[in-house]
Image (cartoon, rainbow, N blue to C red; front, side, top):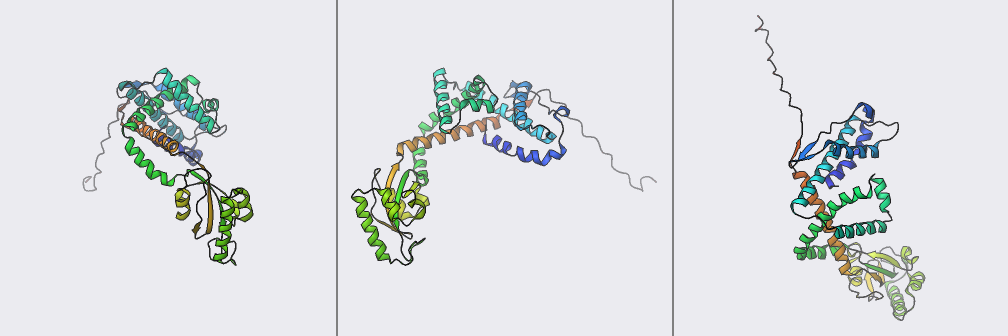
Length: 336
């Protein structure tokens, strides 16, 4: 589904509420869904109506008839979706992008695995879309073929992708950190407005010495840290993006090389920080995820363009009615 169609769908609920007062029973109104030619190939009325009836089931509720305008919106979206799907298939056929059975099987297995990671099941997806596995697979094959084509193009432009990744990396949370913090009289968010800075520094140095000697960092954080939220979690700050923390902290954390490393004592406007990297995401893994997302977005854009650029002609369209000729009104002088 394209981003444009997605925006249209998001407005349907609002349209339903707005026009419910002018609702018409489905039995009394059915939108016109004539067959159309897409780049010279016929898209049948039945195909468009099947998609329309699917959306009708999604939005229809007992005792709440839909307005005429809402029916027309569903019809328009259904037509756009099926036109785009045909245009994509035509593009795939023309450029010989059709997947082999093994490639399709591999991509479908990867898609199902991603669903499971999100806590969803393939069976529930089929049910929500009112499709059989064969019907879904036929549509999925189009997306998979387009995505693979975009992946080939991305490999040709890998340097540009790497450059974009380096810029994007500045906002990525790829390191997990724990801290022990010591505040003093003038530090931001202080828990000890009476503590001189020199005393806070001495306590931080002593805690650092204990951490470096191998004492359990979680225990030390719970006992010593002045930061109440992370203190209860043993100092855990979670995955840290460099752009959302004080620059001194980000610089220290992202200079560490391996899990378990402890940075030199860091001072910020929040006080003194002892920082330990507890986990990290390999850069290569993050780049692959970044590249996959960019390829997906390029595929969506290409699909959207194919649908938008397709030549669509309504078959058996009614002849336009001639504009009635309006006679000029006669003045009082003319009637004399």
